[in-house]
Amino acid sequence: MKSNFNLLFDIFDHCILMEDLSDLTPELFAKAVAEQYIEAIQKEGMIIPQASYHMLLASISEETLNIYRKKSYGFYDLKAYQKSVIHKISENDF
Image (tube, rainbow, N blue to C red):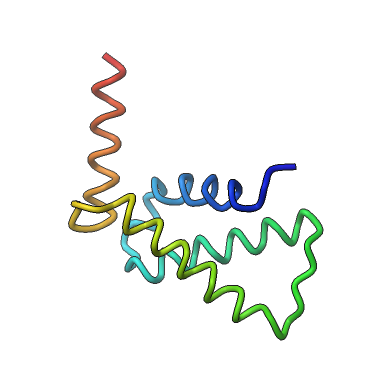
């Protein structure tokens, strides 16, 4: 089983390239990633009490937003970041 922090990075790396999330604000993007992460750890058997769900969601969203800001630093928005990554990938294919 992967560590849960690595799982968060894996989900983040997958989501940051998803075109259907590219129109979200950084805050909504972070929340979407956090929701997917919580769903994934629940599928692995982690039990999250309903009373703690919103606090956990806020905490993971905040951590995800910090990761987002570091990863996308220098780009106007998520679309610009995605364009740059796709361009780099296509350059490496040749």
